[in-house]
Amino acid sequence: MERAPHAAARSGTYSHGLPMNDGSGSRIRGVTPHAHMSFAPDESDAMEPSVAVPMFDGEDSAPPPPLLRGTLEASEKERAEHPRCMPCSGMRLISSPMVLIVIGLVLLTWVPYVVLNPMTTTPARLCKVILTVLVLLTLASYMQVVFIDPGTVPAWFHEHAEGSPGVYQVCRKCNAYKPPRSHFDSVTGRLVLNMDHFCPWVANTVGFYNRKFFVLFLLYACASCLFAAATIALLFGDAVLPFGRPCRARGACHYSAPLLIALCFDTIFGVLLICFAGLHVHMAATNETTIETGCTYDVGMRKNWEQVFGSSPYLWFLPVWGGGPVGNGVLWPTR
Image (cartoon, rainbow, N blue to C red; front, side, top):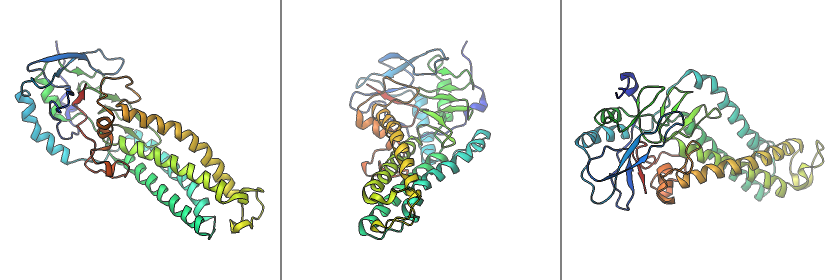
């Protein structure tokens, strides 16, 4: 007998609805069958049983069920309310000191480079401006991923799932209907849309609505570290040697110790972030997460990228909302 979700589990967020077929042969996953359909296993947590999920198969598909059509107005209204601030919880409060630690690490790159290094040459001033811009982009992206709610299952989906018995999974841990690609986050205690992971460094879960800013944070942090390390080595030259002795060459700085510390720090973190940022860029381009690998949601690099960064290329690499990611985190197109 089908388990009905607890009423308390129906609260959540939602974005605008996707069309049942986007005209390119992609099918929307996670909707109730009406006419022609095919079946594929749902992407789910490893501990939860797999349930067949129907998909519309293309041009001959009948219109969506009346229940789904009736939810579009409510879903558009919820979409307009995004981005939302992530609600506070005990674990977020416990993890909050990590936010100050990350900001301090970012400043560990910027302060020795800009504040403690009074170089006055034109190349040095230009480098200081470039690094300052990179640091500001890093911090802006970081604060977005800290505060933006990654998204949880919207109330309209539970109503739709109740009218489609046997189609959708019921989460064992929260007793709520579970859309494709959503997973239960034990840290925040709720289902998260397109969940990637809970990151203590950002005191938040990385999911559908804030994944763009997490990737941008990694990219700009990596760029800041590598730029600082390279220009310290190239432009400041012997300003990092000898250790702790006054440097007068090219008016670099009064003491080389802060620059040497910054050079070591930026080199180590830059190399680590190359690997980490590269992994997440690859997963965004192939529509994967750290939970889901080799899944069936790869609909081409451009569409995959838009489902994380939005539809406007001009805003892809800016830490701004810009309309948010394409889709709603509930219905997913497949090939």
